[in-house]
Length: 296
Image 1 (cartoon, rainbow, N blue to C red):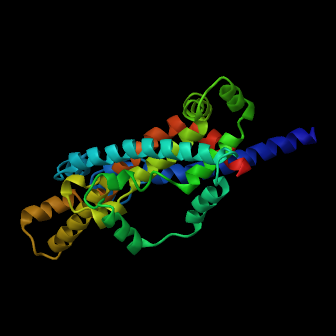
Image 2: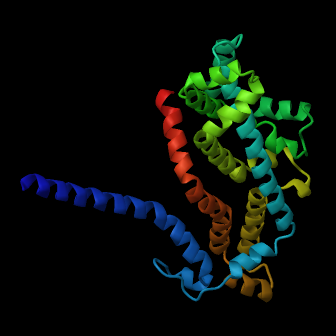
Image 3: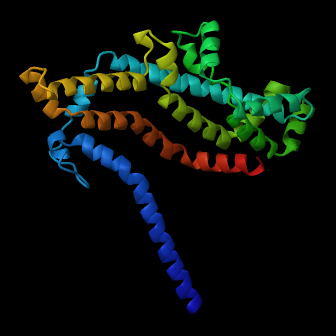
């Protein structure tokens, strides 16, 4: 009887801690959403659980930013193309370095791991991208990220956990390297591939530094970089408005749309796609990450 009471007490405390932890993770996103949907003047007085005087004025302001739809297209394109290329290249390299018969396998694998601990820095990276003629090119967004040491380690350790007899049976039936990879390894490695896809997609969607350093063509601006530059401009305009250097009309608009409301709506716009995709991939994400990390 005492054991059951102790189990109940443990489960009760454990559930309470998990609920508090889950609330602390979810509430910041919920807070951003209700603030971005509230009237900025009312939101300035404090909002905690429910939006006040719901309005979409902040999102309407974002929709009026010049070239925003072009930047959304660029961000979506780099996310889709970059994720596909990264998943395919990392899976293939991980498959190759998992084969013990491959010449120079250890040297190649150790060279890949070396890049996780040491990198050349910003200036050599900038000069290399410039020499490769990737400046003001869409390829800048997808080619440099094709190979990732972390993803290759995950894929390699996962493939090594698969029964070697499957490859041997296929090779005895006359299957070549590419046949084994596409028809046996890839279908069996879907959990780790989904895991790498989630990592890569999040990284591609949130990236903006390469745009900042190497892209001056406005047609190639990503959504994140465009929102960042627009936020800087709006904050400067609002500071001028509050100092009395602007017209009455601009003062009125600054009351409806504040820098805080713009920041919150921008955050929701950039985070929402990840929040929508992640629950769909979570099952594969957890399974692939655990299996790929155990042996590593």
